[in-house]
Length: 147
Figure 1 (cartoon, helix red, strand yellow):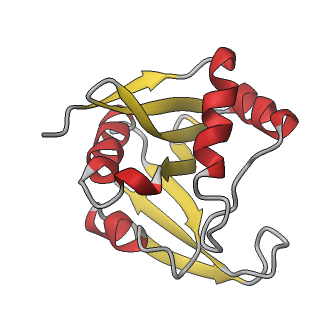
Figure 2 (cartoon, helix red, strand yellow):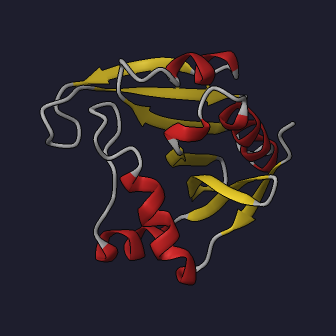
C-alpha cells in the first residue's frame, strides 16, 4: 500500500532532485533539469517537494507562485520504477490541496505525455499548443485549472 507524503525540499536536496530528473531525462515528453546551476535557480524561485512513498523518495513536484491568484506547476516527476501505482495522482492531489485558494493553476507539458490524462482528471483543460516551446524541437501544451 502507498503512503504518499510531500517533504519540502531544501538546497541540500539538489543532488536527489537531479537524480530524479535524470530518471526521466531520456523521455522526449519531459524537459529534465540536470545541471546543478539550473536546479539551484529552480530552488530559488519555486517551492519544491520530494514525493515520498513509505519513506522512500520516488519523485518531485514543484510550483511557482506567480501572484496571489496564479500558481504555475513547473515540474512533476515520478521515477519510472514507481509509475503506474497511483503515486503521481496522490502527489498531485496533495499539491492541489495546498493550492486550493489559488484561482488559476497552470502548467506546460508535452502533448504525448501520458500524465496529460491525469491532469485532465483533476479539471485541467488544454488552453493552447506551442511548437518548440523549450527549444528542443518538441511541442508543448498549456493546461490550466481555474476556480
